[in-house]
Image (cartoon, rainbow, N blue to C red; front, side, top):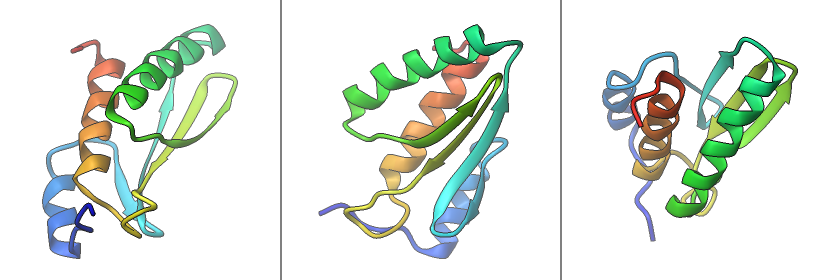
Length: 97
């Protein structure tokens, strides 16, 4: 079973990623794109990476805004998997992948 991170471990990991916040037992971000096409394109790339990592985001999309929440349901909170996927998402959004 995957280890749930402590509050201090979560805060330490948050310092390594930008634009993410911790609340309600998950990490969250909202990303705004130029238009729906750009948003959907990034969502597709994230979906492929999420499938590879076997870890899937809770997300909603309205036009050019994408809201993402990550938590590890099996562990009942935040784990290393959440921060790995958050970093992957950031890399996709910034074009570093």
